[in-house]
Amino acid sequence: MPKPTEHKTVQARSMISLDTTKDNYANWLGDLKSRIQSARVSAARAVNRELLLLYWDIGHGIVEKQEMLGWGESVIDRLSRDLIKAFPETNGFSARNLRDMRRLFVSYSNTEIWRQVVAKLPAVSNSKKRRQSVAKIVDSEITETLRHLVAKIPWGHNLLILNKVEDAAERLYYLHATAQFGWTRKVLLNQIKAGAYERSLAAGKAHNFPAALPEDLAEQAEEALKSSYNLEFLGIGRAVKERELENRLIGQIKDFILELGYGFCFIGRQHRLALGGKEYFIDLLFYHRFLKCLVAIELKIGEFEPEFAGKMDFYLNLLNEKERGPEDNPSIGIILCAEKDDVEVEFALKTKNNPIGVAEYQLKPTLPKELRGKIPSPKELSQALGLPEKKR
Image 1 (tube, rainbow, N blue to C red):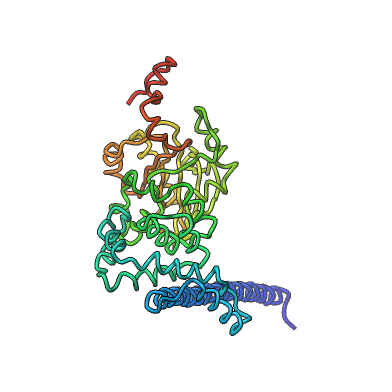
Image 2: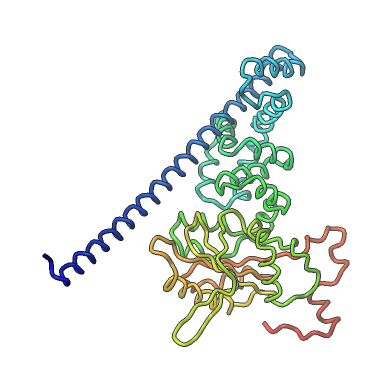
């Protein structure tokens, strides 16, 4: 008969073994769930790709027959009826859809237009690898390359781009962005309405990502950062303090995340960091699913000041030391301010080891050309109101 102490020892070992079994099973189950989800996503993408390639080929066939044999529009209605009869369980062969397939092919098969787009590609994207790969495209390859690019995103997304965007270079921008970041249709519509393409051309992005991150990660981070952010949805028409701006953003966090772009997951506001006996607070903290890193955002209602970069660099050091996960990439900082001078930003970030980006935000749409110069600038308004000039 075991002694009481031996019985307790055996019981303790049994409990440890049981806990270990539970942990092992939980980890195994978690891995299986991840693999199943990944397999489902991969299968869905494969199905979507084949479907889009089919739609492209149908559109191509319609155009070819109409041009070579002189068939009119009525062939589309006849083809629709015959395909629906042959495949009654399959959706997508309505006459309207077939016309959209024809339109898809026509929109991306004009090699002259796309040759011009390729020639101007450095202005469309800052991605070094993308420029190099697309710049190699010659006339015979352009259409095939676009065919496979179109097949990377769902049919509804393609129709949205065709219906909302006329410019060829702009269409290429949204095709690439949707494929790379996995934008939902709502996110894509929001980006188009917010003028993401125009804003990507309006000003260079200010950051030190190439110096602070590995090349591949730097390119991904550069893609995720915009040169400016449209906060018009906040409905602010007057000067506000930073905390009020923060409160408004939290109140409409869904819209703010849509503006930030796909992949941002909100963690919290005024995120507390402790060092020694002191406390520090980050305005907004996010996690980016694809960059796999924490993203700290600081809100500034005025112009960019060099000391903002030093403060953000300090916050990123604390995040990396205290909260960065074992598998996470280095934390990234974004400073959102009303205005910035790119040269000043460049010098402020020169000595910073952490990746920091600086972007402007817009609370109101840009003025139409006919009104520019006819209303006072912020500086002129401050002088008129007798406000003290901000020290530089």
